Image 1 (cartoon, helix red, strand yellow):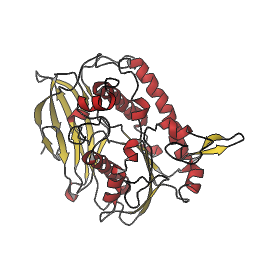
Image 2 (cartoon, helix red, strand yellow; image 1 turned 180 degrees about the vertical axis):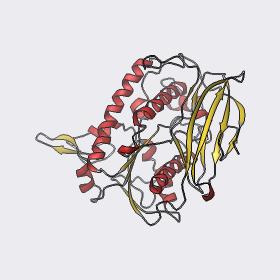
Image 3 (cartoon, helix red, strand yellow; image 1 turned 135 degrees about the vertical axis):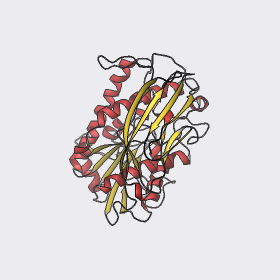
Image 4 (cartoon, helix red, strand yellow; image 1 turned 120 degrees about the vertical axis):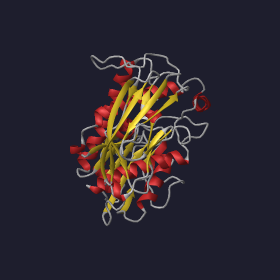
Length: 378
């Protein structure tokens, strides 16, 4: 049965500072509502998957919006569509999300597909996984959740590679996640006095070359010398917060120009992954939204950075990521919709703007796991 549930949400956390519809692309028209959905939502039996409405749309303070969901699976709750899939639901089904204004007029709509794969996808296989990211990865909570889920019955035998194992990492969990790092840090950070990888030193992917020594990006050497000779089958990258957090959200043209620069570094790293691991599937994680509480940003940044400022930057970054990294599955480059299945209220502590709590990290891990299962099913 198609679900048709409409409800009203009052987004009181936003302060309108510029026209919401700012877009640097030629001919783009101003839009008061900007709805953004990835092409696919991944789900696996036994693992809850949700689409939080607030994460999909950018609207002004005090604007009442209604959401209509049309999907033969799942259920609609006040703040989300959610699915606890079963084996009987394996397959692809459409999901349409409509946004209505206070008068009931449909002002935006978008469609995606829900892809449910078997809990036994990949059973009996052997896989190697490399997880790359910033402080959200350094915390090791979502890599731990990926490992926990992969350890359930019906999964492949798995190995994670990496040089970094923080104190919070579970057994078998290693990665390349460092607080404050960007795409550019991974492609170029090099300290000739401290060439070994680490938070204060050099990128694990950059090696000394020449005299005097300079840094050279070399993933093939990384796999040989720092990953025990293992080449990953899957690579996930969760970056973007540090790349873009300080950008000016009030200047749409400049914001897009700076995101262009971020993507140049991203393309450099992805190209090197592709050269050194030609058969690996690379999952680019969509940058997660921040805490729904203004007070959390005040606690971290005083008045230097605001929740609404980051919300506009993050939403535009996701729009651009969907365009830049979308439709590249033939290249084994995929989008992982980590921005959808994250509760920006209950998934965050009260005093942190961009770092989730344990529940939020588990939701990120569940999204990555379900994406991995969908690739294993193929």
